[in-house]
Length: 293
Ligand SMILES: Nc1ncnc2c1ncn2[C@@H]1O[C@H](COP(=O)(O)OP(=O)(O)OP(=O)(O)O)[C@@H](O)[C@H]1O
Ligand SMILES: [Mg+2]
Image 1 (cartoon, helix red, strand yellow):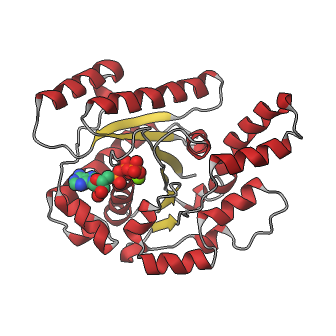
Image 2: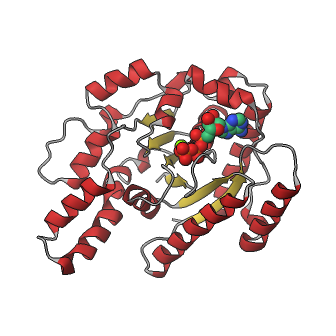
């Protein structure tokens, strides 16, 4: 059974997508792992980091995106147009085992899901919370759990903020990684996320475990960065941090223009080397935590 890993931070622009796709590429290329990236963000940044807009437009037209699977998951009467295995794009960028479930700019938003939940609760306020929680528990579980046995890792890329889709992804995941920038507001984003996860655990809705916090876009060491790091280490413990931090490196940002991970476009760059080290550490930390099944 593959592990489902959430790459999550309530704060936006902290390197969630960049870390998900580059780590996935390293795990598949350097360690021959079978990796599925799931793009849960309607910005479709993960999808467009590995698939050209022209190719995506074709998939969208054929309804070969995550939206089709979400539709099947939330509506019992929806006729499946495609099986998940027909939607998944395989061996991306010529890397064996690097697959993606493409996202969609029209992914189900919270108000659409709330409408479906309202119908299920038959308009009764007392049923609404139970129906909402049922949707959170099962929306992505129905889609991802059948796929997990085909992979070593299923990596989830989320949008920023606290949405139903994010909560459903966290509730389906075995582990999570927090990409963070060494800035004061990072502390806030991580705090909100940790509060949410604590709540899930207290209500026995999740056994998710932290694999680690990784600093992304690490620039010159400033007093502010050191203070943020010290504050986070006090709150979460030094062991919660990956030793590998990802430096600011233009090669990482440039790779997106080629729809390829940085280990292919500029393999000798500082960014590519950092992501290779992060993959090594990710596997080590995962092996340490993996529970006997
Ligand atoms: N190490 C890096 N060096 C240079 N640029 C980077 C680096 N990491 C990420 N970027 C760039 O920073 C921007 C934000 O990164 P990314 O999209 O991964 O963040 P995100 O957390 O997924 O954002 P969102 O919350 O909008 O989904 C992107 O333009 C990306 O190319
Ligand atoms: Mg993103």
